[in-house]
Image 1: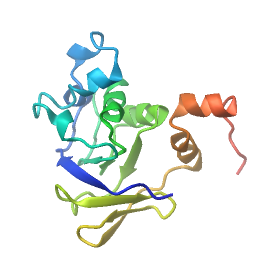
Image 2 (image 1 turned 135 degrees about the vertical axis):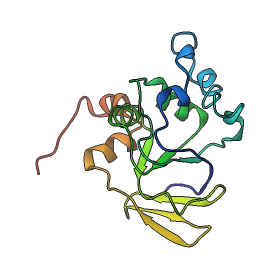
Image 3 (image 1 turned 135 degrees about the horizontal axis):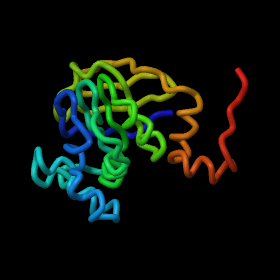
Image 4 (image 1 turned 90 degrees about the horizontal axis):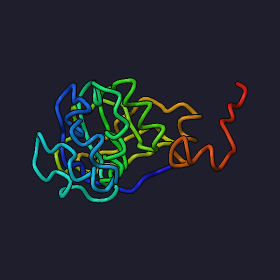
Length: 170
């Protein structure tokens, strides 16, 4: 499955915690995901949300999403219109929350991606194509069940469509 081409807007550093993604001061104050999205990375870069176009990718280093178990972090990223976060590695709890909500997370070497590069995600081929540089970057394959959950828009949508979790025998 191929995704649309998108421009990467921001390559954030290693160990980006959920408080940088969305500050805890909004956790109980803001319920609307679209409103929450207006505060993503505001402690790092004011009005960051205005630079995101629907379908864009965010690229990071290692341990993206570390810190507290805040499902508002991937929820706000999705509400901004991000299609995927590409990083060298993800904090486990963030990974699970993102999967549950339907946000694609790709683990790969991000050293060869610069601001403004055109990226294309090829899930079936396991490749992130950097069209600006003519590079194919392999990413850690998604488990078959994770792919199905993401293709359905997250765990809740998967449950609605399939009436529960179906695990196929190996």
